[in-house]
Image 1 (cartoon, one colour):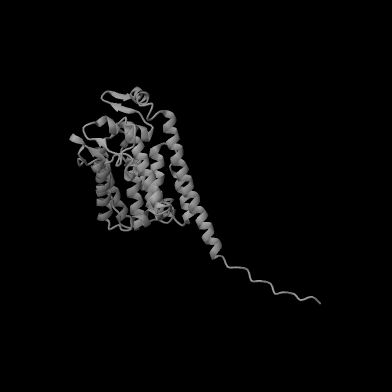
Image 2 (cartoon, rainbow, N blue to C red):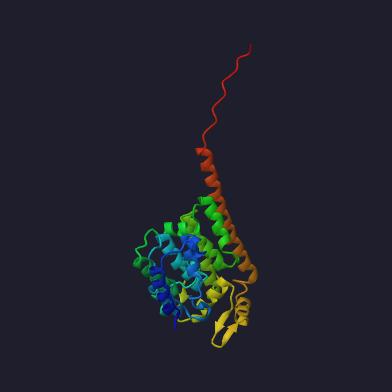
Length: 305
């Protein structure tokens, strides 16, 4: 029996059963119930799936889910939690750091060649799920789902803590999360994401200079694997399995363009941008609060006797 088949009867039971006020489940808030549902054993083992299988499983889970009784925020969070479980670097896909499509590839004669990659398929399935439940204003739903009741400064600091790891993919997730919530200098965020992608593509192509836009060869699958490996800090998958040596050799071959020291320096630069964005948000919020605070009334002058 598949996970989707198990999900549907459970949903029907939930609809027919009257809520009991004396159970532990009844005292959970709606948001906690949605979080619990996102982490049920019915979620498949995404780690053993291809990207295509992950998307198929996500679609099946969604179609078998009973969303009745949930608010729009709860629906959105349940969907998004599942996508993040399937694609832990979801923000890196959304931002274009990994899985880039279309004009960011080229074919014969260096002519741009359309390519539909994982990032596009992820977005299509997400939009299908949102539309099926009439979800609108995704930025607002995302903010309310993950940072409820927080000020801009509090949310920015929470976002900075949400994606630990320090690799490019985690940093891209942080920047994309700020972008999705409408926090910080949006132009600076986008420029930083583009810079990150350009540096990864420069390494993968063994180029001595950045390209604009940063593009890969469509017929060279190794290049996208190199971008993914460098972004996530994982090994390169070859036909027979995992090969850390391949990444090491490419680093040695491209030492003038992308050695470990340069990679670390780029990562530090990006982290500095993130820290400055969060600081600017927090400082701006404090300044606004100070300007809005009522001024204390002046004490009347006391004349000398």
